[in-house]
Length: 164
Image 1: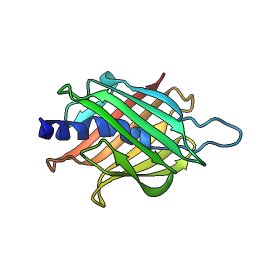
Image 2 (image 1 turned 90 degrees about the vertical axis):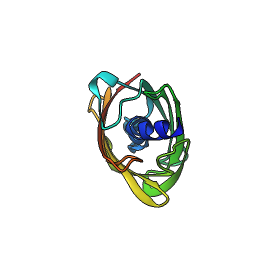
Image 3 (image 1 turned 45 degrees about the vertical axis):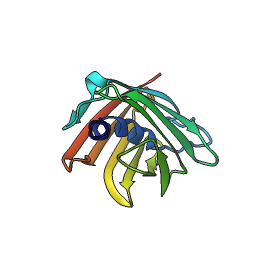
């Protein structure tokens, strides 16, 4: 069951975490568009080659300085619970990730207040890159993931989230 969880996790949970990891900086004048609770819209999302999770929720909270704490909870396609957390300073440096069998660090870089990139690594080697974008109205977020799953297959997931 662990192998099934691991391969499905790549196509599911990391999406949420990646999405979450994609920290966007706040300015003194405007609230940070990434902060809050995001729910995966499974029907609008695509996962290749792995199946989509049954559910996924991402809570992104402010951390010290320009940091952010990311907490992902969900249920994988095989009914395995998903629970991943990390805190990133959004400085492009690797931050430790707990709960993921697929990656152990996340490096978040902000491009502008609504866009950023997350590089996920396992043992120092890049496995997934996520490019996240929050809509100007702040109500939706799209995360485009590319990389390799644990089986060595090329993956390309596009996750759509709705702010709660």
